[in-house]
Each structure stands twice: as structure tokens, then as C-alpha cells.
Amino acid sequence: MSLLPDDFQPSGRREPPSYFFTPEEIGRLHRADADPRTALDEQTWQDLLLEAYEDKLAQGSSIFGRQMLHRRLRAGIGDDACTALDERLRALVADGGRVAALETALLPLRHAETEIAGLLFGDAPPQSPPPWLRFLWLLPVLLLLSLVLLATQPLGWMATIAGMAPLMVLQINYHRRIQGWTATLDSVNALLACSGKLAQAGDPLLAPFVAARGQAAGLHKQVGRTLLMRMSPSTQAYLDWFGGSNVRRYWKTMRAFHQSRDFLRAAYLRTAELEADVALARHLGGASHWCWAERSAARTLELEGGVHPLMDIPSPLSVRLAGQGAFISGQNASGKSTFLRMVGLNLVAARAFGFCYARAARLPAVPVRASMQNEDSLLGGESLYMSELRRARELLAASGEPAGICLVDEVFRGTNHLESVSAAAAVLESLCERDLVLVSSHNLVLAPLLRAQLDPFFIDTAGGRPVLAPGVLRSPNGIALLATQGFGARVEGRAAEVARWLSGHLAEPAALVAEEDSELTA
Image (cartoon, rainbow, N blue to C red; front, top):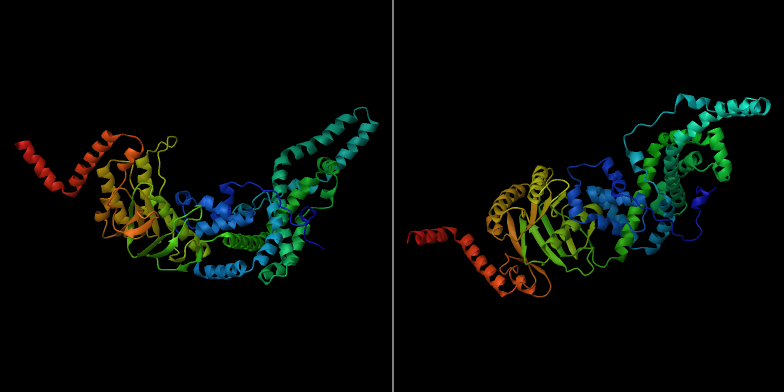
């Protein structure tokens, strides 16, 4: 006998409906056991554009696979789990036919329109059925007796109304609960149906599904679609309204669900892991620039020809760090922010999946923390500088707990130049004591101030393609861009004059102050 309900019986490769799930729903599995010390925080997730990357990975996956991919991205995986995943992915990438067969077997999962991880892995205790449930059978009996009175007594209609009233109240009170629970059961049935298909697939990778097949079939009989539910909608409606059958089934299936929650958790994790693996193998099969990443020490980072997978035409960049962080400078629009995002995403992918987007890579499996998109918040009542200060405080509080990598873009741009440089130098020096820091900035004076902690690099675009070279930018283009944007020679000339004076003042402040004092006393 097939484990699949009629709704899930395949007829060729037919695409199931595509359901929308909110980020909050996708993140419920991760939040069930997340460790805030090592998991990516929300700002890092947004700064590194990981939601868009997750969407790219999860194309064609159900809510089960999406939740597992999200969990891996946010939390990473340990060395042993990474080795096991590496072996599974290598086998799947090498066998496209196997991936296609597993995709077909996993199709029932995509009929799930409600996520169940929150219910399976949450801490909410199961509800106890109300005491009156055992006497529910009396209500339809009383209703039948009232109908007899209606036919034989002049005032029998009053007894009929009295018999129908509690049944109507029951349906009104339980309507929303039963609707939501029915959607949950449909997702459970999709999980059980998929487990049945995978147990029949004959793939050695699926041995755990074969071992659990009997228990899955037994649970399906308890929570699957019963004979009553296969009747016509009108017949079922009569049974619900006048017999309370849907209320009895609600409590019966809820009890079966909670009694089998340990089994369902294991089935969920097995299936979600497999679907996530298939999604990754499918993604790598269509990717042209990637490699298996070796794991390195916490303060060592080697990325050769790294690219960002969300860019249509990426420019590979290489970076090597050993103990020291990096101060990144470059002309406007040279790609400093993109470079930091590229490094960050590759660090996250290597920690979560064991591969990254480069020709070769040795990357540490450590937490990544970013500060790249601080901004004014009118509704939140927070200015740009205050948001930068808040984020800097968060990074300092998390630094070294455990040691990680910090990616900081244009630090403290929300205040004046002097205070921006001063605050940035103090915060970055402190961060560098416990974390590996990569920072990009137009404030070139930070490079000599932080040379003991950060090696200087600049993105050189002179050759037409960007290259990360050692040293500090010598030819900024902020003023030159005034001419290309139509400001005119007068504005451009005056800006250049002020820039020369400021550069000299910052380079030799003592000499300039002495010169100004002599001019004032003359």
C-alpha cells in the first residue's frame, strides 16, 4: 500500500504550487537552538545581502529545505558535519541523474503551505483536550431527539433550537483553530508522503528513510485523510456541523502529533537535510566559479580569485591575511564595499557548506560580523552617527566571544572628519585586539594610524580590471568627479585648492601652525 495520500500521487513530473513564506517563518528552525555568540546577527545578514543569496540557493525547494539552508547559513556547521556534508555534496555533484531522481522524490514537500518547524522544535507544551470532549457524542443524540419533538410537539421547534445552539457555538469557536491545524496536518502529510517516496527510491543515501518507513506509515494512518474526509464537501459539512466530527478529529490528530513529535523531528531533519543537500548540488551544477574551501586558523584568510555569486559579471580579487587585518582604500566606485561583501559571503558559505566562490580558498570557520549599511532612521529616531555608534558598541561587545572576523565599511561617516578619524582609530584598535578586521574607508589618514593592526591595501583600477594591491591609495578621484558631473572649472579648482591645504595640514600640522602664528604676529 502506498504511503502517499491521493493528493500527492505523482503523475509525471508536475510542478507543485509555489507558496510564499516570510523571513520570520523561514528562520524558525534556526531560532529554535541558535547560539547568539556564533550565529550571524540580523545586521550582518542584511549587510552581506544573504537573503538574496539564500533565495538563489533555495530555488525549487520547499519550506523544509529553505529552513535548513537558512539554519546552516546563520549558524554554520562544525568540522565533523562539514566533512560529512563535503562527502555527500561531492557524490551528488558528480551524479546529475541521482540529483534529478531525488528532486522528483522530494516534490511532495512543496505541497506544504505551512511551516511546522516552530511547532516541532518550539517549547510550547501540548494542549490537553477539554473534559467535555468525551461527552461530545451526546450533542448529535440530543439534536435527533429534538427533531422528534419538532415533528410531534407544537413547541418542538424550541427544543430543536436548543439542540442546535451548542453545535453552532462549537463550530464558531473552533473554526479558525481547525483551519490552521488542517494546514499543519497537510504539511505533516507532505513530510510523511515524501518519506515514503524516499524509502522506495532504493538509494543507499536513503537508508534512514527505509528504517523509519513502518513508523511513518503508521503515523500517516492516524493523521492522514480519513474516509470521512474523502466524502463530498456537503456530506462532510453535515457531519461537522451536526456531529462535531471535525472537533473530535482536531483533538485526536493533535494528540497523535505530540505523541509522535520525536519521530517527526527526526523525519523533518532527515528530509530537510536531504533537500538542502540537493539544492546545493543543483546550485553548484549551474555555477561556473567555485571551489571546495579548506579550513584555516582563526586569523588566517586566503582567497584566490574570489567573486560574489550575485554579480552577473564579477571581477575576481585575491587577498591573503595572516594575523593582521586589512585597511582597504580605493577611488570612488572602485568596489571597496563589493569587495568586503564578497569576502564576507565567501566566509559564510565556506563555514556553512564547505565551498565558496573562488579559484582556491583557505578560510576560517568563525563568526562573521558586519557594519556596512548604517543609516538615518526617521521612524526610529536614530541619526546616522548614533546608528554607527550603536553598531560599533555591538561589535565591541561581541568581539572575541568567540574570535571572529569584522567587516566595516566607511566607519563613522556620520560626524565631522576630525572626530570621525579619532573615534574610528580608537574603536578599530580595540576590535583588532580580539578579531580579524577588514575595514574600508576614504579617510586615508587612518592607514598610518592603524598600521600596527591593519595591513594597507588599495583597489587598483588603472589597468581596467580591479586588483587588490598592497599600499594606500595615492590618487583619489572625488574632486575629479566634479568635472564629469558638470560642476564647472571654478568649483573643481576651489575644491582642489582646499584639498591641497588640508592634505598638507594633516601631513605636517606642527609646521603649518608655526607658519600661521608667524604670519599673525608679522
